[in-house]
Length: 210
Image (cartoon, rainbow, N blue to C red; front, side):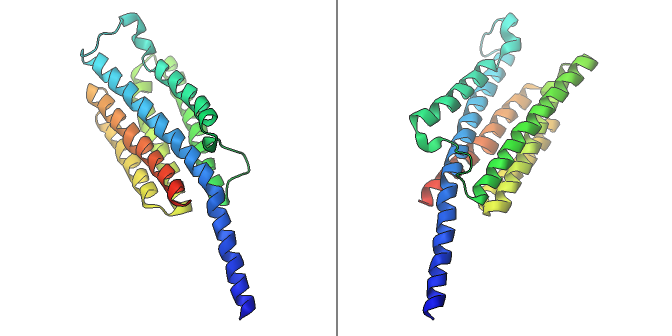
């Protein structure tokens, strides 16, 4: 009986160590998703304001709309770990579940980069600027749906399942409203719903598991 009790305690201690090891990864990835989603949503709203005439913008600079958002996002991603060391992603420090989620996020980044390069090549070949503007959001949310589904399979959290479902719906919506100013608003809403909110949920999960 004593041996069984000791074994149970060791098993509980092992499971607890897995959860504790996964918290830094969830917190860091959650912060990344939250910052990325909010910055890109604001950038999309500005693009909508320029496109509809609510905000003046030089015609010569219209092609560069959004680049400053990407630069700001990268700067914050670099500064955040320095301001808060708990948001640093340390290779090999995460639990198996944490590594699986991080791997899914890395796969999203690589697949998205490949898709963007492919769309740019298609745009150049076909001389059609709509290919990138229409295709990118659809690919983005389709890949996000796969990523969040992996996250749900790993940690069985309801927020991950909802994020996957929302990403599927936004991928369909972006195709349905493609080509108009409504698509830009849908893109902004998608960044919040499929990236910022799930990122906040990841950070909350990491905090609650302390």
